[in-house]
Length: 586
Image (cartoon, one colour):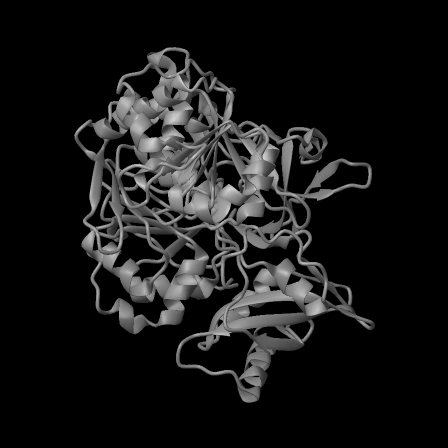
């Protein structure tokens, strides 16, 4: 990239001194053992995520931990002390039901207080916790419950009536079904238990289970290209990564008002919507409602948000809504914006600077990594379109797989290969549920092979190319869809773009693009020709799309990733595969 595109940082850009200012020095002196000592060595040999998040690190009991927002209702503040007591109560509820350490507890609800109480209370009890998206239908719920062997499910009376009741007979491992009354009060549904009644009867004091760093804590499902979802297992020791990445990647300071827009049904919403901010003693904003540009700008302004962690989809939707809406609001407290879910196009990074007054800092990680691995951070220059550089404690490399099953390291800058991470960070997943062979295939020696293609430039910045199964092979060229999508996003009419390879008898695959448009633009043959010409000018004829289609919106997962495989399946009339994570309306 040219230096004109570089977003340079100076000390004057930071309203607070960032936690990480010496890139090489901090990385050279970092040891995970030191983080472990800081977090729990002085508190005994037991490691429990919830115990550390709620008091063991001396968080102020009277400070607001979680502020819940909902349309037409007053905000509800839950202090650290109240959250500690509520999660103690739920831990005792589970013990009273005979739920033992290691049993799997699932939770299916919107972003309501009971969701967070369930997650943390079950962790205190030593259970393996699996949050599910509330938008899942009956089949995906039953599939995940059965894969995970869930013995407890906490949900709401409305979700139970709409989704769970009809599927319950297909969940043979489910022993206890607890219902939260969405409108308040209590529930009285046969063969279920009322959450509020059990909580009122439970003691507010409990001693968390004596879990160790390698005891399983979290189960996150991530969809494969086809077939059943994969269940990634994480341990209590992952708390070290949650704390370190909250410090380095999100730059959390004690007085921050933090808003992570992710739902806990996605790993980001658990790692950074629940655990990391509590470990740092900050106040988290939790909005129950779905995306609305005016509402989101209002929250940023009215709640005085200082650190905002969101998804590229949300950024693109704000861009699509137009800059005029943003001009009605002021964000004097906002000091840092980060994004995750899929690569953030350069245009979106620059849009943040122009419209919000701050560039958007992309970062990269996976469900399997359990926490942020590579990031753009407050003190260092941004190369728009790059995922940034590895955090302290993370060793990354670009590799190529050999036919004999080994790997060779790619040292030449700007050369594509597979992104690999060296074992050793605490939140690395410990297995795929019931799929040991699949798990083993992710590793070669000490290196975890991510399945993401990337390149590293001469300055050590990493650039996402695409998933290995997304790369387009055309006339001998390997084309990464993200590069083509980013070029299309630079056109003023384009709100979002998705690119696939379409079979072609001559070149193998031709590039086809799908776009949705910003407000004020309409589909026309003239506009499509203009977009094709724009892409050819930016990328050259060999890489630019040969066909383009305009859609009202692109299919994406609830975590914000454009589902290229679904675009391809629909284009070619192929089976669509697992759609359980598809955002409604896509």
